[in-house]
Amino acid sequence: MSDSRLVVSLPGETLREAVGEPPEGVDVVLWDLQSPAPSGAIDLVVPPYMGTSARLGALAGVRTRLVQSQSIGYDDIPATLPPGHVFANAASVHEASTAELAIALTLAVQRGLPDFVRAAGEGRWAPQRLASLADRRVLLVGYGGVGRAIEDRLQGFEVEITRVASRARDDDRGHIHGIDELPGLLPRAEVVIVGVPLTEATTGLVDADFLAALPDGALVVNIARGKVADTDAILAEATSGRLRFALDVTDPEPLPDGHPLFALPNVLISPHVGGATSAMMPRMGRLVRRQIERMLQGEEPLNVVYRS
Image (cartoon, rainbow, N blue to C red; front, side, top):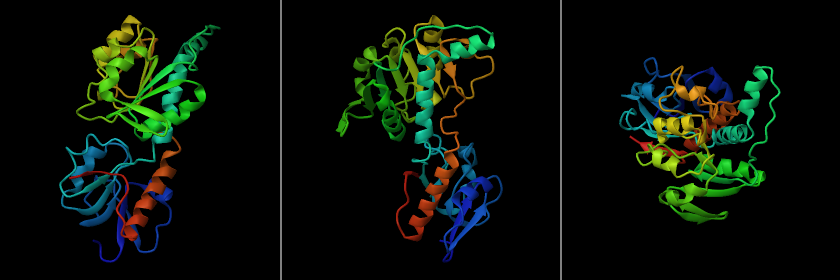
């Protein structure tokens, strides 16, 4: 596409440092998609991590071989990516960090850490006996890369894990239930961790009926996308005190200042930071290098999820 040399655009110096010295025959340019394209033909384009979809219009009229996202989710891409591009997500970059946060949120709520922090802030010693994570029935809703990473980390906590994916199947760990089986699975779940991609089928999945099917005291952890859940339904169950919630994602997002969910003691909110750790840039740099090497060798790119 670009004479005999491969042209790669990166959004900034941080990722360029993570990628390191490019292989022979590769030219790296910096482009954040907020200025005119540095060339009419760029083999590999890596947009910025945040606000990607809003900037993809800059690719109109630019010939590319691959647009490499820095995120796993891509639900907002089909509506904004100009025609003629191949889009890859960042599978392998965020799974470990997102799984860590899912476990951290689950443990924090199960063991009452928010209550202890509030008491300490008031100068009070406030012991209480709370539910363990051990011996709980955990329902994993969504079994892609993040779901598998969460399961891996749950193995040492002595829980009973039930896995749910878009369709029923079996693997080397046993049976995976189809999402159509949820009505029969929710009444037994003590902890539900939601990690499905946002699609038309999963929008509003965690609605009033979903929550009503859960037993009293159940914990719902959402590390998927905010629109997977109905915020009004969550607020109703949380306000009643019947269910507990740990939310890394919300709808709307960011959650407006003063939103009533912030004030509820049975709701723990983190500001969509599942992948925001020190692991991201080194892993993103390795992924970009793998994509470059595959292009140089004439191989198909990894993680292609959409063609516009």
